Length: 84
Image (cartoon, rainbow, N blue to C red; front, side):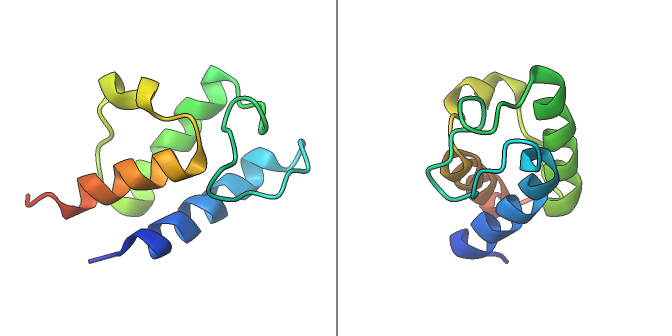
């Protein structure tokens, strides 16, 4: 089972191709829309990669809670801990 720091690291790695154009360093407090300038299409692409990488399903109704990389990692951490 993965812990939060491992999940955060994995999310940051997955974000690198999406953030390439903005040139921002990606960290826990990085704003996905404001700093990385991710469009809704890029966010959906990112979510598909996150779901595949972490083998989770992210409920779309929880997306408004996600503003930063840390928010996304925390949500994944909660989903990974759930028993199947």
